[in-house]
Length: 250
Ligand code: 13P
Image: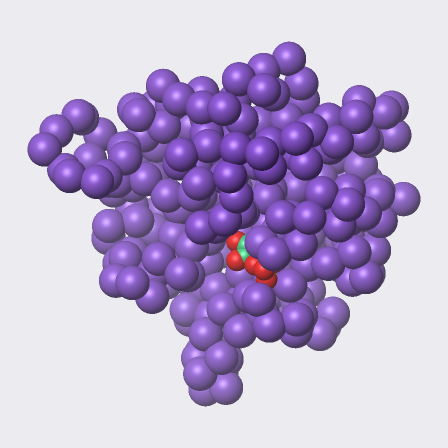
C-alpha cells in the first residue's frame, strides 16, 4: 500500500463553532488534487456542527462523523443522548467509538461493544479506539490491554466491513510525545495479529492517533502498518491539517 490512500480523521473534541466550517473548506481544495485524491478525509466536529458540516461537504470527498454515540439503537427517553439513528439522520457517515477520553469517564468494553453493534445497524463507518495508559505501558501490559480491548469490544461482531481501528496510546494524546518507531511498529503489528485471530480478513485499516503534527507526519507515515491518522489538536488548524496530509503523501 502506498501513502496516498490513507485516511485522515479530524477529531475536534469539544471545540469549534459554525464559523470554523470555512477553515475546513480549504481541505476540499487540497484533496481534489490528483495526488491526494485517493486519501480519505473525515471531519468529526461536535454533534452541534454535524448537520452543517454534512451540508457543506455534500458534493466533496470529505466525510463527516460523530465523536461518540449512545448505545441504544432505537429512539427513546435518554435525555441529552444522541444515538446512531440521530447521527445518521444528521448526515454523518462515521462514528468514533471507544475514545480513551470516554473510557476514562467509565465506558466499558461491554458498553462499547453495544455501541459498535448499534453503529453497524445504521451502516455507519466505525473508528474503534484502543490504547494503553502510561501506567499499563510501564507495567508491560500493553499487549494484554490491546488484546482485551479488541476481543471484548468486537465480541460477537460478524460484520467487519465498516470497522477501522485507531491505536491511540493514552500517554501520547495531547502530550507532544509519540511512541518510538520500533514500539509503534511492534504495537501496530500486534493489533493486526489480534485482528487476524478474530478470524477476520486483513482489510481492516489500522490508524494511529496521539500528537500527530506536521513535523512528525512524514516519519510516522513511513511506518507501513499505519494506514491513517486520528488527529486531535492539529486538526483544529486547517493549515496544520493540510500539512499533515501533504507530508504523509509522498
Ligand atoms: P492529539 O492529536 O491532540 O494528541 O489528540 C489525539 C486524539 O485523541 C485523537 O482522537
